Image 1 (tube, rainbow, N blue to C red):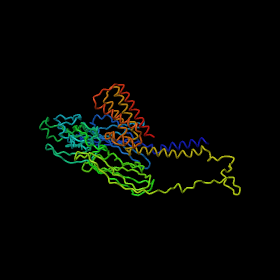
Image 2: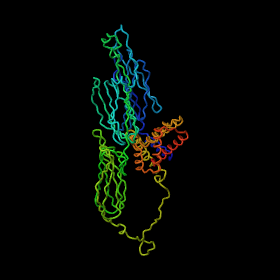
Image 3: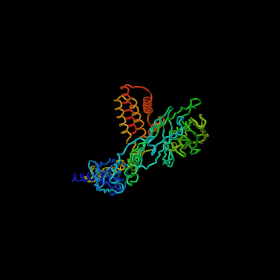
Image 4: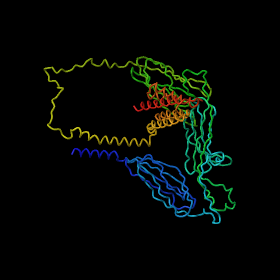
Length: 608
């Protein structure tokens, strides 16, 4: 009997863990129309639905009577009535190359070891108006070409990059503008790859602008995006090219045709063919000037722009050991996120505890500005009247090209003596003695009453079985919560994948080590470290300066030796990448081990 009960509970647990997780997978295909003229386009959509996160690309059959072009992919996630569902749609453009009753054969996909197939689709292709006269040879459409945008292809589409200044100081905003000029339609949304922005802290500048522009007597639809770049070090910096991959409608030139072919009504549709174009913007060079050393204040921390400082207390009167909050706010135009906390004056009669920071950032007129507030908890140790001296903050002012210092007003605090709670407590507590004769004291041990046999519900194994369903419910909830976070919480996904991606980059650097490629080896090590920290901190790796890394790790309570090791590795990587220095294989192997151990130590600390 006992074994049956155990088996029943195990079966229930197994069912509860998998309930809602298992869901039927559907795999279907459809077209926007089943009857077309020769060389007209058909949109084929293949859809996969079910509780499968990583949905691979379906395998299309050989479609010998069609030209096939991929036209993008979309994916959706839903969580309804406890059911998790993922839907992926794959779009293709089909252009028939012959007439008659054609068939789009079944597509296949393999998920969780099982193969699924769509139903075949019949397409009727008629000659229509697109068939040339019988006394003329039929013009076959050319194979779609793949070209890189140059001045020639720029007649229809091109990508242009520009900056608002070619010289700037360290940490001064440089605004990068990317403009996509378009004079023909695209068959799908372009695939965008941002430019390489090594050596810059990057801030997006919404909103995206759309307008029309006329160039060379042609009207273009223009899409413009902007980014604020804050250089982190001096020297010549290169902004790499951005890339757009577009699928466009292409029309063959009429220049090589018989002049009388223009009277053929089907000629235009015969020559309409999709073409993939790869557009690249022009690379840009920006000269970054170092900040002047003369008259640099001792408390200067690298801030560039124009700022004001204000300080305030949440109350002006308190008691000893009763906390009050000091708020220090820096506001102005510049790199708000990189602002360091102003140094506080010596406050010998107070204990000071950091309470965090908050930011308010606006990007009106494509200028990064706003405020950053630092909160400190002050705990007074003695009574009296105190005056907090002004708090100072220095920055480099771009308008005057000189260092400026902004100050807060002095603050006054009245601290009253606190209540001495300890004196109100009795010095000792008398205990009743069991030896007192004139009263019956409470007995601390009572005799046990027991029955001859224990009931089933009191047996330990039975009690444990009652807890198992609750544990199973908790496990199921946690697993579903994990799945939902993977789809909706970017910081959660980045935190989970950080160690795995860093390990892959380390493996790549190990292969470069074997090839004795010193520059790429050190670049990959830098990507592993900065990418790991960016994922863990949920910040863009390209915008993480060493000062940011140091500040964030200090806030995360990493010890000083560990922080210095990470900064030293990144400095070594930068030196190796940009200095004309060769490295021995043994040095590179030792550096690889050092970087690996640093990543392991970071992960161990973060996992606690």
